[in-house]
Image (cartoon, rainbow, N blue to C red; front, side, top):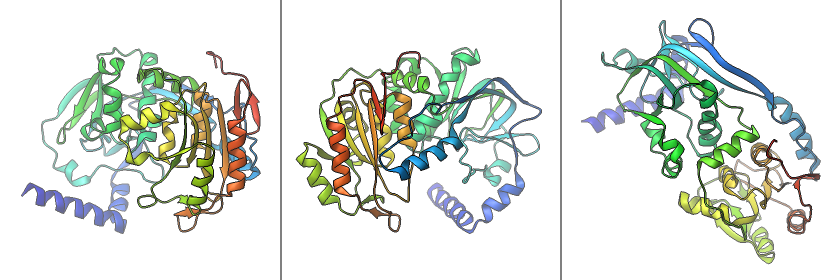
Length: 389
């Protein structure tokens, strides 16, 4: 009977979502609040994280795009926000205050805002878990490794700044706690194990008198290095040359001339790998062992996080009509030794796009023969990053 009820609930939500009716009703029912009475910033700082970032690449289309996109995102905010008297629903930890106020959640996708489901809210149990203080860690963020890092884990950089005791409960939904990304880190990280994790039950409503929301500038270089330390990875000298391809049977954004590309890369000693076919342990090991990486733009690239930054070399391939700076921003924040971009042709029907193999081979040879002792980003050579950067 429970499975039938679950199916009907899911089917109803899907119908309301696709028709747009559920979103319209929710948007009228809930009143979004981010400031005012009951909101207090204990710490708030805005920083220019991309100041001085190189933007000159061989393909001027990418260079021009990067200059403009950096202007949009370079000012990033870190803060510790205290919100009083918040009720958190169990499914996604969305925050509710008196008067149907929706508190800005742990992660907000501006074009995909989430709202509490109204009926479960009205029919919620009378008994709730009562907490004096808690940290709002992750109810919605960890959709993949990228969001696990830039929306959830990085926020812990604010814990010391907040002055809160380490015994303060960190709230996380069961679904986020059980993700392979969180568990891979948790099982290897004594600092995380020492924190007081409160895994919210599937039907557990939690009321918090003082709820703390953390945010760290997503591409702050120091924060990325601190995150890496939490993993306590063994030191491995990289040696592999890897072409990170995508399984076109499962994903879009794959190469139309894949066979020609793979053949060229194999001539230069690269092995082809589909990361989605590896376990998370195998993926982390792969990136630790990789010295030279050629990769199609996609979520798998977030795992350059595990590479040896002082020895790592990366060339990213992306469609001309789907330019994305995320993994260049990440590489720059981490201080990866070498990073370049090759822009292919337009992606057709959201699936395939070609790359000029001659242009790609030239980029690969530049990478393999690079002798600069410091860092190289596109056409710009920089000194090695110091511990103060």
